[in-house]
Length: 307
Image (tube, rainbow, N blue to C red):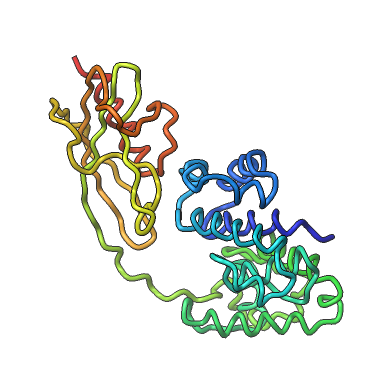
């Protein structure tokens, strides 16, 4: 059964490097606010970023908005892989997912589940990430099957489920696998060891400071990051003192990004009013990235405990 291209695209972008349990409420929230690609394209990018707050990998939200505008300009999603690849933020995997699941084209979106299945079926021991191209090429051979080409949407989703429920990362349930007798890794007794992953390099560590300034109404002073770079376009806490105040030490918070870990020292203060013209939001519900939410909560706790 084919799905709407908008729904496939939105879910696949959200699921990049993020688990289903985390994505589900965001997906529902986005569909409620933006039921069509046209409504998403018409929304201010700041609103889209604020709805995305907490989901991480914020370049996805900026690309999501840019892609929605491009699709709205075209009048519909392109019905070819080449046309899909030309859209902002759509790479090979997402293009193949839309092509197969929404348009029934004979393409295979190779996610982590399918990558694992292919590595085991063909006993590919080249360590990841270097072995990704080899494994993807081998997985592409699945589409030579006549039944797969006849129903690429069903086939792709069946492979997703196979990897998620049977050919799992640890303790694969080979006894229930419909492809067990064709699996080279099972025949060699190495299924659970594949795919091999190269050791990850040590993650660099950075430090910084976040300033939590609250007013009597419970609003917090915020800044908006530049559109490019880390947390681009997002609302954040100031990194330097925004006003002269009696700043209270609120401890530190830890956060792990993809390429580095971060320790933020948190300083907090309260004053009757915030500076005129400052960006602000209710502290309890401010749409902040996860690291900023941690810092804000630490600052609020320190101020609540102040004598």
